[in-house]
Image (cartoon, rainbow, N blue to C red):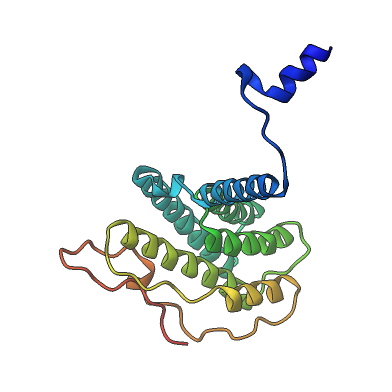
Length: 213
């Protein structure tokens, strides 16, 4: 036992023991802190969003779901919808939310989540889909389309201007979900060319911008 204690005190392979004084403890603490910060920075980097093929697949699938949502809302506006129409619109927003979360597109994820929550209430008979409510859902889809165009332009190396923050839109969706009036409703939808993919250009072009409210 005495010999083993000497080995421990002397360190491995006969190295002299290193005193763990205040300076040594401080150095260890600094090293651990630096390692922790490095790991956090690495974790915050979404390498999946840098994969051009994954991003392109996301854009294609998300746009397909937005087209399906718009078709569903048209049926609802015309009062020709069935319960499956609401389920389909809900599933499309839910899928967009999941895809956006996978690539860490947090704004798209937030808007899709709030809108699917509204549609979930409607499909379960807890919320009446009034014309104003349908307008809010359309606005959410238009906003997501603007973000898809922004992501596409950025991936192509074109100059882009991000859409405005989603807070006002989310407040409208939440108000509609609670059965209250949707505040700050826009008088017009964004232009069709702003909601649809822009044609690729040789020279850098400005990104999609929503219509002034």
